[in-house]
Amino acid sequence: SQTIHQWPATLVQPVGSPLSLECTVEGTSNPNLYWYRQAAGRGLQLLFYSVGIGQISSEVPQNLSASRPQDRQFILSSKKLLLSDSGFYLCAWSGLAGRADTQYFGPGTRLTVL
Amino acid sequence: GENVEQHPSTLSVQEGDSAVIKCTYSDSASNYFPWYKQELGKGPQLIIDIRSNVGEKKDQRIAVTLNKTAKHFSLHITETQPEDSAVYFCAASTSNTGNQFYFGTGTSLTVIP
Image 1 (cartoon, each protein chain N blue to C red):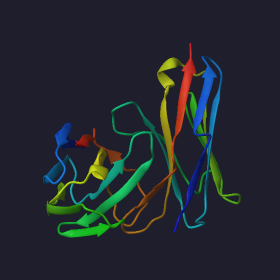
Image 2: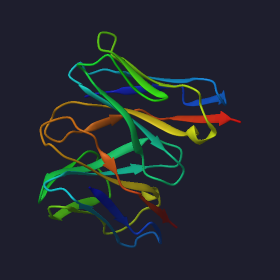
Image 3: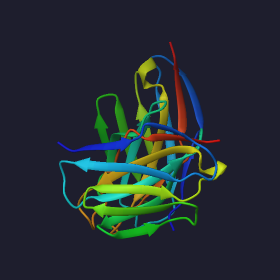
Image 4: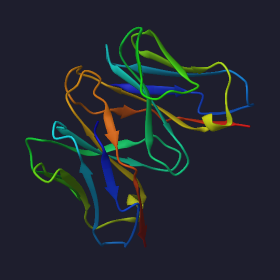
């Protein structure tokens, strides 16, 4: 069966510090991968998605970047965090490129920027 | 692009009553409509989904209906229980390469014992 992991689970960082959040998927190959941000009490905002190694699409201009160094690894980064980067970050995966398919979410990372 | 609207934003029901959450979408090319349940501090979990070639799907106490002509779909929960309390999200997607989902803004459901 497939599983998706995110770490860390929680993170408190000062403004201006760097960020690296990691997401890995097990039990599948060549998944589509996604990063979402969820502000408190709000909906899901798609930040990035990737259909393959080194292929990243950005949905909104922002202070963040994403990379996919391996097939089942997706990393969300920032060089300098802003207060507005606080939120709940969710990674998700789906299979069957070219077909609308279920996205499965990880447990999330709660980021607080102070 | 696709725009998904979800109503109501909050919903309170008595235990045992039914709950209905409605979503509308704008892109007629959308053909996949999942529903997610999110408990506090956790990632969303898929509870039911429906594709555009089906008008209704049921799984025990949960059902989803789809009206392609009117571009709306609904989640129905019968015999609600306190553990159904959570935030529910609808989404719409097309068969594009990235399988991008367009989410509604969520409904906070409270089931009162």
